[in-house]
Image (cartoon, rainbow, N blue to C red; front, side, top):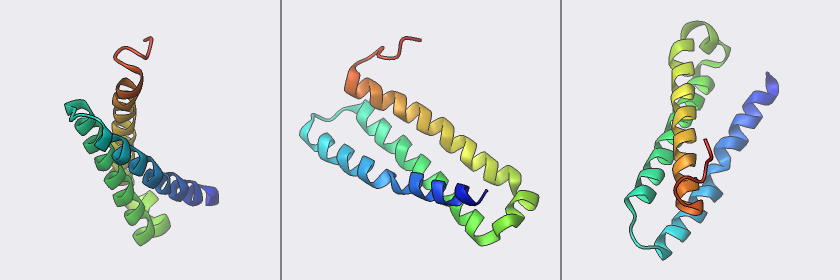
Length: 101
């Protein structure tokens, strides 16, 4: 999909304002192990998406044939980490048990 590359880039680019606002807010709060875990998980997921993007840029459409498992694995792991990191972020903002199920 031609739009996929643009959307991936915009999603990757959206990391910067999210990280900046998190860092600014974190400085105003007391040190919290959950906040540090949230930060580290989100940074790892950002790195994984960056690695997948680098593979895609280097190998182009060949990625589908030769490195599908690695590429898909990186994106799947990044997605799982984003979901868990977002859950931690929600708990930091809205309190524990904010998600009803």
